[in-house]
Image 1: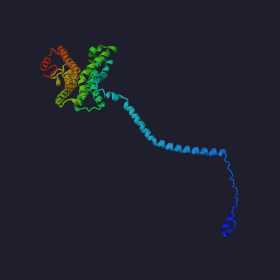
Image 2 (image 1 turned 90 degrees about the vertical axis):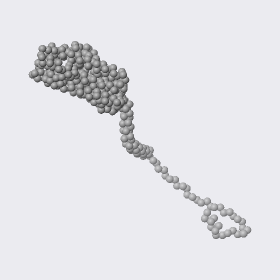
Image 3 (image 1 turned 180 degrees about the vertical axis):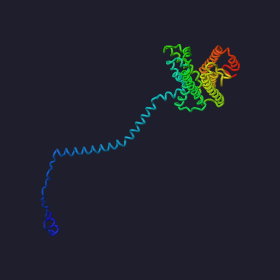
Image 4 (image 1 turned 120 degrees about the vertical axis):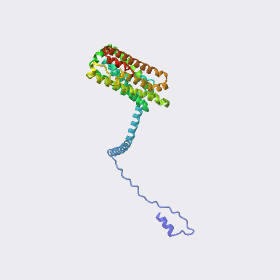
Amino acid sequence: MLALTRTAIGSSPRVGAPRVRARAAPVATAPPTALPRRRTSTTSTRTRTRAAVVAAAAGAGAGAGAAASAAIPQIAAAKKAAAATVVAATPTLAYTLSTVVGSNLAFPALWALTALPCCLAFINPVYVFSVGYGLAVAYAGAGLLALASLAGMTIPKLVAYHCVGAVAYGVRLAAFLAWRSVTWDQWGKRAEKAPEARAKSLAARVPVVLCCSLLYACMCSPMVFHVKVAHAIGAEYGRVVGFGLAVQWCGLLLEALADHTKSAYKMSEEGKNRWCDVGVYQRCRHPNYLGEVLFWVGLYVAGAPAMLVYGAASFAPATLGLVFIVWLMTSQCAKQDEKQAERYGDNPEYNAWVANSGSLTIK
């Protein structure tokens, strides 16, 4: 190539002279040098591969661990939400009880409440008409308020006074009768003569418990309907409810005062052999029974507007209970007058007291 270049540059061809085509001389090139092959051992290749895999796994594990750490709060929140959903879907005891007041099971629930304390009859059958009676009334009032609260119902003041009056009446009466059964010497003898004392076996006491608790539930039923439809009672019935509550609480206070007066008098030296004619007994021979009648009449009247709203059928159990308690108290007054007449009939002072006082009324 270098010769051809020089010929082209150094001289030009002459005219007439034959043109000779110059050929490029082959340039000798060195054969390519072969690079020596690096022999890589199988062991080192496998080692590097394993290291790369371990590093990749470590990186992936670190990334997965960070992702898992970030997902922990979300998982916990999801678990809480699922648990709350399960709890909300599962009917609990409180939820089940809360639906009782607004359903047709309200009266059976009231019967169950009054039956609990009546089970004292399995200890002594006489308790079903004494301590069990007072506690049944208290359980009815407190239980209805508790059920209404579980149902999320707004309890008006008049409804609260209605039920709280029953609680106060029952607790006071049960405490008094329990105290008298311990301190009164003649309680045991009179208890043995009571009709309910004839139920000796447990099987014979079951009907006593069921019947007495059903009767107490009927007597307390006006409170059930008052709780159920309190917000549907018209304002025009407010005075009726208020009047009933006033009579109910006056009866409660009168009976409490009469029981305390007679108990204190009978524990004195003068009262051991004399009839009680002091305090509230001056014008009424049985003010304790009068107080009880007033209590139940007031409880009935306070619930009458609610029973009108609920339906005429609601008057059936309430009227049955009221008629029974009025009949029982009037018959007890007649029996007590007869017994006192046999014992003190020859005493002019006793006869004068009888002439100037009423049996179940104030004279």
